[in-house]
Length: 265
Image (cartoon, rainbow, N blue to C red; front, side, top):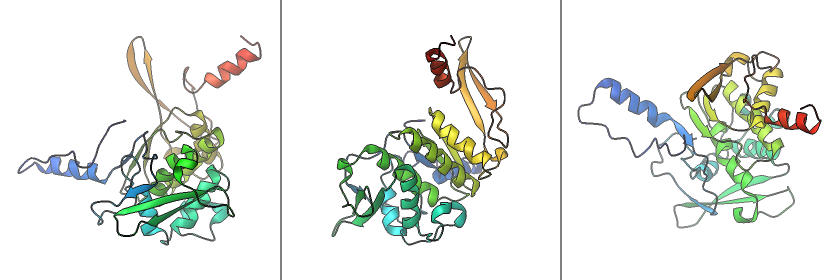
């Protein structure tokens, strides 16, 4: 999916067929977040079209800081709120609550840069610590940040495509990101996720097991190559989070390595 661009690259022919116009309009509603994010800066642009609905964080997450500044005090539905922090349901409070789930103690803030069309992002690693520039903090939190904003500001009519939500996250953070995605999907958003992380998958499976999301709301597809031909395998998950008919090569390398270390093979 890397490299897909849904805005600025679609040309509608003169007098297009209605189905073409409808297809383009569907594409324009999509939010796509690349595996590459804009992190090597502390200032981020304002969207050119300020009439866009909140949550379109841009292909590399470049507009997430603006939406945090613009919608920071907007209420977030309880279905999207972290249960342990549901008493404070503004975007800013919930963003920092979920950020703390992935990076314990971390908080993010966005401030406008005077006399510019830029927003400055800053982070601190604890409630009593000073805010720091993004360059002075690990990339993980800033890779997660745009996805958290897109999820919390999501809606049922704006699908979100995410490439590698696990990027630069440690295993615990990857699992909690899976839990976040599951809860946002259960609240009505649609996510299409491409991942190489068994921890993200485990976070989703645990969310199914705990009843956060129903198994029928989760679709799993395994893309593989057999006999020099590409195959797509649809997997089913039950209410306990178990995956039936687990195919070889599907997130099984950890088990294979542990078995080898134990001398089973």
